[in-house]
Length: 242
Image 1 (cartoon, helix red, strand yellow):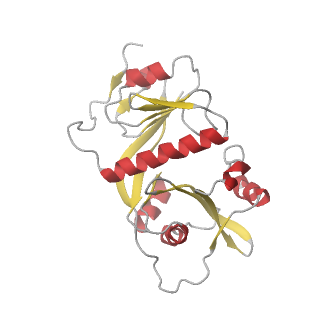
Image 2: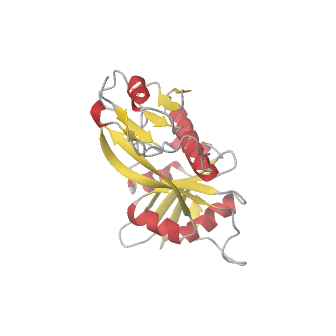
């Protein structure tokens, strides 16, 4: 379709991509690959774009820009025939409004360097690993991901669904996925009346997967909390929908 163009403020393609940003983007797409496989959805990576071969799992995009030189025209070509679709622009550089899309949200990629836990004698962690289908159902009901994080996820060793409990009740949650050299931290939340302590969460993740950097993306108050908890902002992204 004509008339679709890139945002004039695009990344400098001559500059080397920040390796922290590359790690975060690659970890995110590895999450997509694993979750799509769990849902029986195929995918393809071509010309710097990841895309699903059929409707992706709920709350996930149909296409993801993996390289800064990806154009809006290429994204729309990949989405041809899909009336409802989502796109993750990993560099916040595309304008997809002429394709009938709108920005759902903007966020920031985050990165935390490998570091030891805060205490030399941390004692029992308040975070525990979700082990059973019943525990997962309790966890996902608080995060509206019942149809996304299926029980089969618990059978994959690289994934750790984590819950923080107070008096036996889940008050916060997160998912950590070990990839190639980094841990993707996603699906973070805290129930009303509680705040997620990102430094504490990082300790729990590091106890499971030590000596790896942690990556992810957040926005708003959770982003501010993550930065206060030792993460760095390494780039912007946008998610578009129609």
